[in-house]
Amino acid sequence: MKPIRVLAFTPIPEEGAGARFRLYQYLPALEEAGFQVTVEPFFTPEFFRIVYRAGMQGMKLRLFIQQTRARLKQLLRRVDYDLVFVYREVFPIGPPLME
Image (cartoon, rainbow, N blue to C red):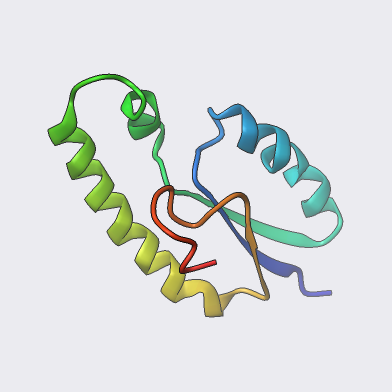
């Protein structure tokens, strides 16, 4: 049987407790049940480490633009999947346009 392909969007990587508790811990069970899950966090681990710190606005802006481009590419690839799962939001700021 062909696995069900799932594209999972999360704003935070596995380092974030919310995503780890609500998504990542279930991946082994989902794979055993026949799902092939691709998780796409908005924040990279590097970006996640600095996003809530004071300062570094230039680096944060550069990383935000870089990740926005990556997210838009990921959204275009959603047609390659059978199911799209959104944990919290597709973009960490702004109105829920993509959801």
